[in-house]
Length: 228
Image 1: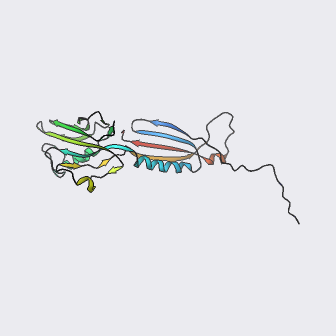
Image 2 (image 1 turned 90 degrees about the vertical axis):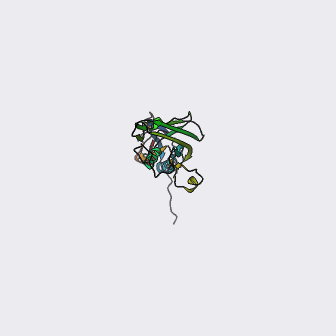
């Protein structure tokens, strides 16, 4: 006995829908940005968001102080006469200086200050190649009118993080030159979220079904920087 097959005119459409994602800036200021990428095929939110987050955190070039030379100081376990902070505390404060560079060159900055009071990052003299984006950062406190503090800063460009304890960074440095942990990355924090979405409100489009909504996603990325 032969089986009978009935052919219908309705053939299921297995062709994936072609989406055209757009990038929209939702919020933006000197240190924060929020963008949305949509619509994306289901599963692409994580596929795009995770590597993009890793790249932003680890592979963006920036500038940082790599070593300093403080007058009359030969190592970090000492004290500068008339300065409230120990040298090691001063180095920790220096590590927090954020620098925006205008060129690709390595350069120097200089601090020369005398007299009682607070010393901030804005007191540092810079060339046209560098801009200190957090000039209000506290560095040290001078206790008397006769106290002098003179520091030379070496600024380099790089990627990621370079600890001061690396042997190649310490060997060969002259006496009195103090290496500093260098945080080159201008990006401080990145997170993203993936949500279901729909194609925008365009006249003439049919209302999306639940299946359509399940296929589409929106990737919202929040990026926090040091203003560099």
